[in-house]
Amino acid sequence: MSSDGGAAAGAPAPDEHAATAPLPRADPAGADRDPLPDGSARLLAEAMTRSGLLWVRVRDDGGPGTAHAVWHVWHDPGDGPRAYVVSGPGEQHLPWLPDEVELVLRSKDSGGRLLTVPATATVLDPGSPAWDTAVEVLRPERLNATGDVVARWRERATVHALRPHGPALESPGHHDTGDGATPVRPAAPATVGRRPWHWRGRAGARRNTDR
Image (cartoon, rainbow, N blue to C red):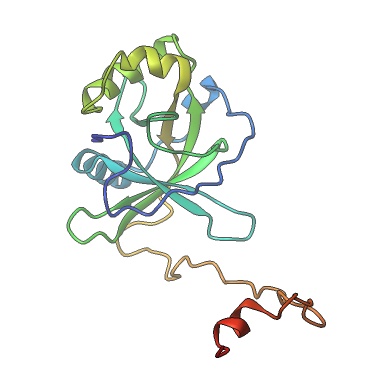
């Protein structure tokens, strides 16, 4: 749940440099994705229902990618379960998402990675039956909301449906041993050649000079 539109306290800070590419629209072809194996599906459903927080990871080319913590609602409208996420002005931050993302679920007890699954990310068109279904389950979980939340979401927010598919990428006993850290690239020197001339000397030198 969310009381102020943001992710829960203690979650990683979202990436503030959101991409500006157009968001992918809902694609019915996503319904044909292979479902998760039974074991992973049961674990996924349990993890999703026990915690209202998940991490949406967008993979970088050749890198570990960036994970964004978001509150969500797990719901099955009748054709397969998915996570609904609302973002935008007055809500939580979520950058542009490609068609394929990864959902990272953490243990509510230890905080460690429990399950990572691939998922399709689609934007629901405001006013469509799929959007109405998502808003119907999201609205009660949006605590401390003021004004007409549904109207605001229709005008300014983005509602995503994140639908898991295929085999789990990580599961209990089968986790990536890497720490996911991105190497820091050394920066070029800030000053090249001679220092610039300053009238009456440099400020730091003047502060340390007795008068």
